[in-house]
Length: 74
Length: 162
Image (tube, rainbow over the protein chains, first blue to last red):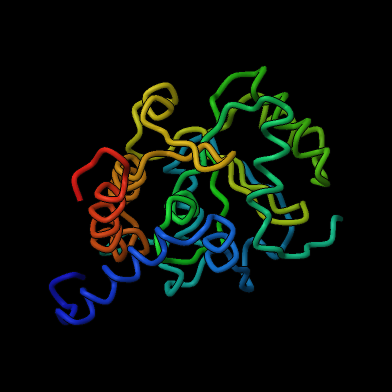
């Protein structure tokens, strides 16, 4: 990703890092956590998995591709 | 069913309840990085608890106290420490990741962890290692930015040359 960023974008990101590090934790939380509609979570069902690979398979099968849960090539 | 009312401060609600019930755990993933100061956003609260039956019982007590509706089966899976427990039946969503990718052990991660206010947070190096090991597109897309953040974070730490 870095290779595809313009130098000015990368410098801007670095400045964002420094600004965010200077902010109090309350501001990091306020602007860092959000909630969007989610095709799995919105069912309000609790789920458990015996292994992380089992969880990965579930995500790949249950989420649209644009959520990015798949590994490259899948 | 508990009604979901999203509040960004949910991380504080979890931290306070887990502290009260003496749960051993770390904030991990992008949520952990955000607590450290990463300029990103996420809807996930991912927690890495120590896998033990006693710690599992403490988690159940803490979650129940803050309004999570847990069935007997949910409680058993948390106490038994399934590798991944996804809880969507509460006032907000929480993922309990008992075996995060790329992390050798809870003890090793806890040794490297940092405390931000009352949030125990996995080190930025371990957060990056775990995302790299997970290898999902959403993780890989962010790794370079997390590495850039790591440079700024480590330079900002007292005692580190800037």
